[in-house]
Image 1 (cartoon, helix red, strand yellow):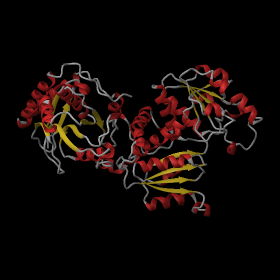
Image 2: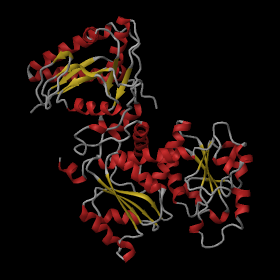
Image 3: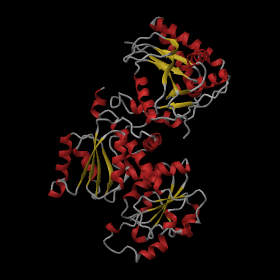
Image 4: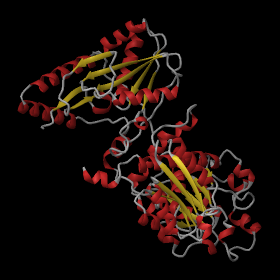
Amino acid sequence: MTQQPRRPSAPDAGAPTTEAAATTAAAKTTTAATTAAAKTTTAARATAAATPTPAATPTAAATATRVAPLTHLLGIDELDAAQLVHILDTAEQLLPIATRERNTVPTLRGKVVCNLFLEDSTRTRISFDLAAKRLSAEVLNFSAKGSSVSKGESFKDTALTLDAMGVDCVVVRSGSSGAPRQLARYLDVPIMNAGDGWHQHPTQALLDVFTMRRHLGDLAGRRVVIVGDLLHSRVARSEVQALNLVGAKVSVVAPPTLLPPEVERWGVEVVPSLDDALPDADVVYLLRVQRERMHRAFFPSTREYQRLWGMDGRRLRQLQDHAIVMHPGPMNRGVEITGEVADSDRSVITEQVTNGIAVRMACLYLLLAAPAVDEEAGR
Amino acid sequence: MLRRLAHELIEANQGAEGLVLVGIQTRGLPLAHRLARLIGEIEGAEVPCGALDVTLYRDDLGRRAPKSLHATDVPVDVTGRTVVLVDDVLYTGRTIRAALDALNELGRPDRIRLVVLVDRGHRELPIRADHVGKNLPTAYGDRIRVLVEETDGQDAVVSEEVPA
């Protein structure tokens, strides 16, 4: 999105005169009687409204007025398209902060963000950690291992304890679908879902769509091919919903055993073979083979998976020149993706990680820089 | 008026040497671009011009809905230069305080000057402008809006009285 203002086409000599005249008129207005002032004001506003407005930043200008404020980030299914785009636009402006010599801003100074990680995660936790720190928030890391949870404390009691300690936001990762929503019922502070069971992983989907948008521009009508374990994947659920919101076309390719029942109702097209899906693809999104969630055999062997559903150099060369390859990480090299593909210039996998911090900063900013809900209602 | 401000800036700086203009998002930006171009024409030199979004440095976060962010993009290193902050309306001074903080993160300028199109009074902080287009006495609650051709389709200053 371009932020550069349009250069005025008229010779600049005229501008100061107009400004001066308008200023004088306005100055008179303020000293004149109230009724006259009201009239002048109305007239001036009418003129302004009637003039076609070539906004330099149409998205930002439009979103400033119409976007509904966020209260939590539980799932992509609770966002509308305007909110999603607003998060991405905000992330776009926060991205350069990371590369500055001083890479923090004081925005959330004094706020406490609690990372409640009841399921193992390294990259997501570190990413949230960094995002909060770049905004100058305090971060509390709370993981199941070595905490009161391992002593048998219930989820509800953990939540109430955090509340009593006065945290301003809880980022929760849990193996149980719906845990973040449960937490939102117990606490009055914004809750961010960092992945719950098979259900949702909204910040992953947001950072993926953000990365796609940076490479491809407007995503409406673009073809995204999602490959792999859709059955167990919270990433895929969030991803498809986010892509539908921005108007992208989604195809899915997977072993039949790893397709959720009624997957067609997600608004996707099921393509039987990966080779058929590749020539049209703008994005190939490879899902991780999640061995920890597979308690029985969903496909005969790793070798067979790689041959039928894995992305390798031969398949890479079937792609259009602008197409990109993505993966939410951590990768199983040699299973869903070969080293050649992962390290090729089509792969934007490390960029996804970088963008993830900016997107999480955007979510924290929009959730925590807002007035508390009851405060706002009081005005 | 901008031409006069451009001349004032050149005089204060004794030329265009070392100047970088930084417009505060959003209405200060087109004004900064125009000033940079005017100074460039008068002095026959290219004057760098950038944008600064101060939202993340404001002191009223949490008191109102979070504002949309805009680009911060200053094309040159500000360290050792004279930075001219440009904004449309000077009011409480809180935006400028935030801008000074934001600028500080980008480097250490030799000096910072402030140019505003309209000074409407009612300062809440010890901040003043070095160059003012027009002093415009107002009541505290009034709304003063500067419209610029680039984003609003016309150049104007609109004063709205808010009935008590």
